[in-house]
Image 1 (cartoon, rainbow, N blue to C red):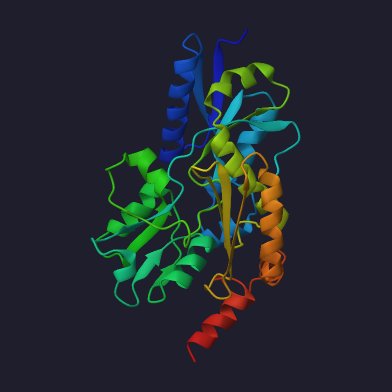
Image 2: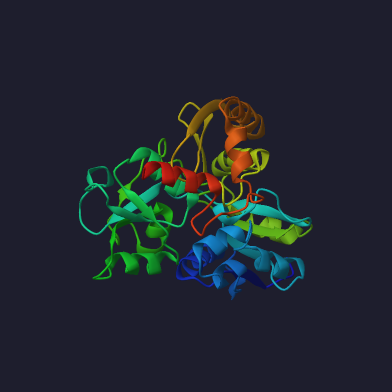
Length: 334
């Protein structure tokens, strides 16, 4: 190795910086003679303040600028939350390492100590995720869901504000644990079988240039094959379904004690209607074949109808979403 300083691109949010510093600490343990430096880059996603505008901006809004710096040779690698990564990477870039996954589940953080299933009818939950909105409305029929944008600490502050209308928020458990520690924020872990996590949720990754053999050696010790296999199945199914950030789609893979990979998925409309679920189990060393199997099951159960209507090409008829969502709301208020 001829390099003595390794530059790693990262977003500038408190959570992103915390995650990057944790990755650097791990790398430093394997390579004490190297100096690892975080390079903060502001992304398109960081500049957008509205939840609807963020969804309409398309995929990769939190990674494109980091990837551009990587391709130009301005940095040696980039640290990402894997759930921010599009299912297809730009030519010339690869995932050099997928780190061991933190808790993949979503977490409910309430204003009090009432679990989400016991909230009073009409209680308002904040989230900007179409996936969370759809699954929450399908699972907890008595709640309402409102848009909530901002980084993790911003959302926590909005929840705790004295005049907040929110009964709680739903965020990734991994983010809470990384930023505030295991006991820093009280939360309820939501079951992954019903509130199916986003693709790659809970996992970090290191993106590098494909031809950079030195960086492959440097980041290699952090690669976790079990997490990589599970998330590869998730990302392959996402690619096959062409599910973007506007599509309420949850996919989660997990390797059990029997060594088999179980892949579950849930897809529906943003108002929680016409929700379909499916799961498949297969060999952990064949994640793409398992994704293909689950794709077939989902399409047989009506996935195409939902995906066709919710593609980015659909024209929104209001600030709150697609034509289907507006019709469903009108029907509910008759």
